[in-house]
Image (cartoon, rainbow, N blue to C red):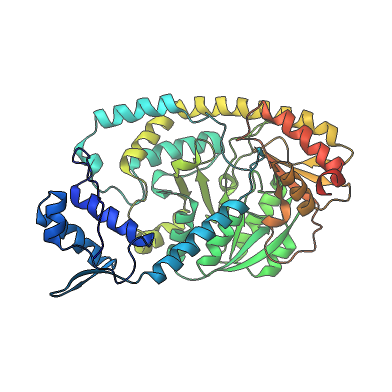
Amino acid sequence: MTELAISLDTHSKIPLYQQIYDYIREEIRRRQILPGERLPSSRSLSSYLQVSRSTVELAYEQLVSEGYLESIPYRGYFACEMEELYHIEGMQRESEVVREERKPEYRWDFAVSGIEPGGFPHNAWKKISKDVLNHADPELFQLGDSQGEYGLREAIANYLHHARGVNCRPSQIIVGAGNDYLLMLLSVIFGEKKKIAMENPTYQSAFRCFQSLGHTICPVPLDEAGMDRKALEASGAQIAYVMPAHQFPMGTVMPLKRRMALLAWAAREEGRYLLEDDYDSEFRYKGKPIPALQGFDQGQRVIYLGTFSRAIAPSIRVSYMVLPESLLPLYRQRGKNFSATVSRTDQKILEIFLRDGYFERHLNRMRALYKAKHDLLLRQLKAFQDICTVSGEHAGVHVLLKLNNGLCGEQAARLAAQAGIRVYCLKDYYIGETETRDDTVLIGYASMKEEEIPRACEKLLEVWKNPGKISG
């Protein structure tokens, strides 16, 4: 019979039975107690430890239920064979080590998303949150309107009208936790799978969402003005997903003539719609913001998507969709049963943040911060003029570098990674096969500290000008 040298801590917050259980389990896992070995009876162990017999029995019962011990009537408790457990745990530990070893470490990450470090409006958000909770009506903690709270939808409608030229009523707005949820809801509203044309390259999250929902994706190439009109017409698509204010990842701003052409395409056949994703229109550093496509729509063919994740913080997870009046009956019929996915307290906080001017002040601050980084980055990139050209500037939070020194995008990204710098290949944003040359990378600046940009650019220039020094 195995002797158990258990030392119990009677002053610990951990219950005594738990301490006994933990000790025996670890001894079995470490093979200090071998399979088939008999353990002391509950009576003898309780006497040895000077605890109640029920305490020991509780520990033994838990070990039996988890498969560490086997109880044989009239004989006692025996350790079980744990070979499979060792094998599985060993594999898990080994795979975790492999994952940790393979996980790259970057000193500088030119991420194309994210926000300014410390950019979240902490003080304002904290103040509003406190006021909302201190004066909360009990009704606030009940299930709310599935479309989103009316006050928030009204605040969004006012903001969109003045800032983006969007014409809508609160009844047309649906609030949801992220664009993925809203795209799923839109699929429910349509009630059938659709052929969706997407700009190529495009926003991969939207592409994967449409794909997982079973829609047929029709990649449409871009020209200098945006989605190619002839290719769109030839695709046979019923819906065109576009980002006219600032195409991601190319940074193209769609001119008015092309916008009118897309509206004309949608109007030519019943059931055609334009899905306008206006994901980061707040950040433009040259000229005035481009009005939303929805504001030009006279035929109720534009479905408008917006989000606060880019402007406030990714973790806020509050997005909204503006439906044309013609789709509201279908929403009430098919989508009204979906409960709101954003808590009423968070909606109330955001409503006040919008309504009382906090959001406008926050945007002014963030535009100034991002413009300073944008201008600093462009100054640093002047030194790159012999090896690449820059595009996509003056809006958003990233630019594109088209290499002309013989490196492809993947090689450039790999060399950068070896130097502790992360950049992003344009080819990763394409859908399907493409004949486009892989010679472009994206670099973002929102989540970079301003003082890091010059040093990161200096190092990046060094490794791209002298690739043999790093790769060899």
